[in-house]
Image (cartoon, rainbow over all chains, first blue to last red; front, side):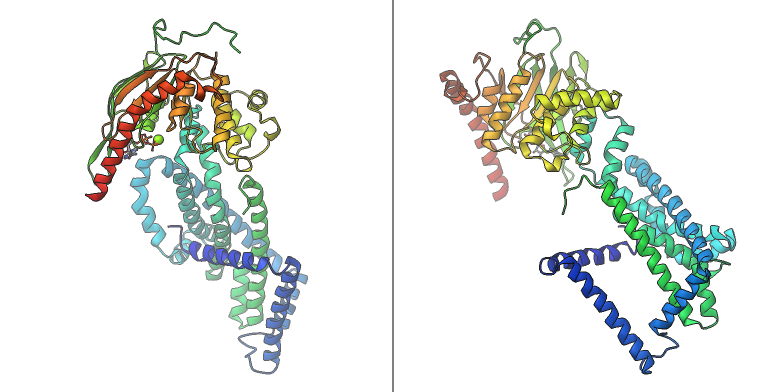
Amino acid sequence: MSAQGGTTRDDTALQAAGVRRRQGRGVSNLAMRGLQLLLALVVLGLWELGGRAGLIDQFFFPLPSDIFATVWTWVSSGYVFPHLWVTMQESVLAFVIGAALGLFLGFLLARVRFLDRLFDPFLQMFNALPRVVLAPIFLLWFGLGIWSKVAFGVTLVFFIVFFNTLEGVKGVDRVLVDNARMLGAKESHLLRHVFVPSALTWIFSSLHISVGFAITGAVVGEYLGASAGVGYAIAQAQGVFDTRGVFAGMFILMVVVLVVDVLVNRLERYLLRWRPAR
Amino acid sequence: MSTTTPPDRRGDAAPEPALVWRGCTKTFETPGGGSYDAVRDIDLVVPAGRFVSIVGPTGSGKSTILNMAAGLLEASSGEVESFGAPVRGVNRRASYMFQQDALLPWKTVLDNVALGLTFAGVDTREAHDRARVWLERVGLKAFTDRYPHQLSGGMRKRTAIAQAWIVDPDILLMDEPFSALDVQTRQIMENELLNLWSGSGKAAVFITHDLDEAIALSDEVVILGAGPGSTVVATYEIDIPRPRDLLEIRDDPAFIDLHREIWGRLKQEVERTYAAQNERESA
Ligand SMILES: Nc1ncnc2c1ncn2[C@@H]1O[C@H](COP(=O)(O)OP(=O)(O)OP(=O)(O)O)[C@@H](O)[C@H]1O
Ligand SMILES: [Mg+2]
């Protein structure tokens, strides 16, 4: 039910968690970190050697050392920061607007059965639409500036947050609601003390995905037509067959998303501290 | 504990009973598209201040009856009255202790107990102060900052008791509140419940599978017949004097006589339920 992309990402996360738990017994955390670093170095090293030996075409797969050199140039010259700033603005706006709409409509439809039934087919229809096809029309509607990317990101974020909120609110244990009502809870109390906290678990599982999608929306939008942003920088590099630039842009985005994910994790751990440790 | 004048347990002087079920029938729709009468024509009176237990075979509609009194479930026909007024929506004079855990897992023990006050608009500081008093009363003073999953089953029940009592209801509805506990803990909880209740003047409707428990606690035991369409088949007056010592009461000759008598009747209904189940399975 949760929107596309959600399930696969969740599944891999679950599998990864399972693997981590199984291995967690034998190998200490520090040793595992060391092994991971080693693995990364081996892969990059083989890539580098393969490239230098001419086994790997350097045009399509530039040497890791060249990619890092390009990243360093972009960072040290300050070239990438204005682009990153634009992308971040678009992502944050897309996320905030999309999440707010998703939460609002999710809670509303979960609590008002009539509206849920009324809107259901339309929401399914829009959700079925591959969102990328909206990018060109948004470019026409909102121009080359940030708002076409924001609008695009919103359509991605909204559905994930919306469906997860809907499920989260509907999935609240009946007896918790009954108990609260017996203790005198009005609808607004139920929302604040029962439904929102209960839905938080779901909303958070979707938060990782929707934050990622907000950034995806911004970058894809920029790639298709923009005058600034990391997606634009990648498109520029591609335009002059600068694969190093393309890879450098990818790397920088990856790091940014990782950092954001860590922050989201922190927030999640704080807000869900009432949950039994697993 | 009884500082005020004790309420009249016979109920004939009290003009308005705490709860009256008048010809209540509840029909559920079954998944197959048919309908199923869970209870039929329930007539029952619980006077103010009286402790009434309801026993009956599984599926006889005990929870259904209680939910109608709570206002969580509407009768298909008939009506429930509480203190003279028909129950529409949630019954504001009643508290409910559920069989399952109904504490909010994301709130601490203190916040859970204070919940009813929070909903009533009491400010947080005062609500917490009053919740602390209640937590001390149920012996959980040291656990105010824990989350429910960090408590034992017995402690969660104590928290639930404090949560239900803090709003000072006139009626306590309890649906097998202690059935998930081990025998020792259950006896302790029964004792504590009785201590709280004595002299409180609150009406209590207590559902249980355990006839011992029902007799030990109550002024009156009501037997529900086997379903479908079960109804009140017998009521028994429990005239064992109070205060009662729950740890000794099971050896009391009056208790033993009552138990034999009531069990004789209850057994028939249990056997009928069992037979009906077997029939349905072989059909
Ligand atoms: N929402 C519902 N929809 C359909 N049937 C229901 C519903 N709730 C209860 N019933 C049926 O009504 C009957 C009475 O249910 P109820 O829960 O009141 O029994 P009970 O006496 O509390 O049983 P137990 O002792 O097992 O808790 C049962 O046969 C049950 O299957
Ligand atoms: Mg029941």
